[in-house]
Length: 72
Image (cartoon, rainbow, N blue to C red):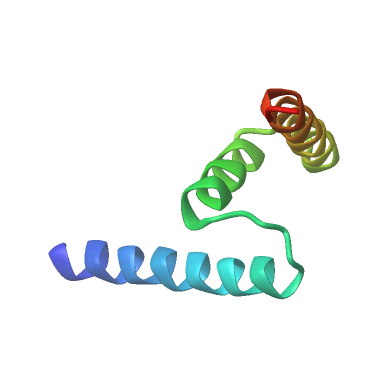
């Protein structure tokens, strides 16, 4: 029983490592935690294209706030 759980955990880790490498090759800017959250959301039925659009909008808003908070 424990060996099956370990095998499953190893498979999940290997999958996440591959996804992280693909993410890096595509220059998504997602770290392991963010990528993991995105994967879990997609597994729960969130539309990947909509999720991508939200991430892009959040990045734009974050950049805008950074620019506004810089002293002149």
